[in-house]
Length: 88
Image 1 (cartoon, rainbow, N blue to C red):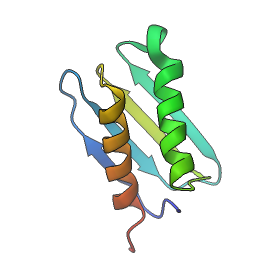
Image 2 (image 1 turned 90 degrees about the horizontal axis):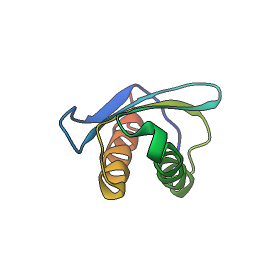
Image 3 (image 1 turned 45 degrees about the vertical axis):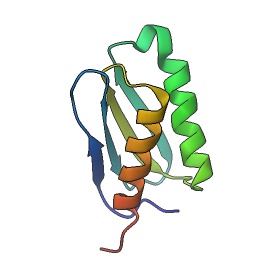
């Protein structure tokens, strides 16, 4: 799958997150989180698993997390990916 346009999904409420996607030449993942010190590696791992599942190899992924659980990270990222992959 290719990220063809800017897209976002989620909210900034507690226990949720916002995912922002943009087309890019390489893959970058930027994580801002209230629990970054403790859980950044797990958030990054979950994001990478979803990207691998959908075959995403390039794009700019920015996540603003407020303590979301894995299932919420997966759901928000998959929604944003579907929006970003739509035809222009």
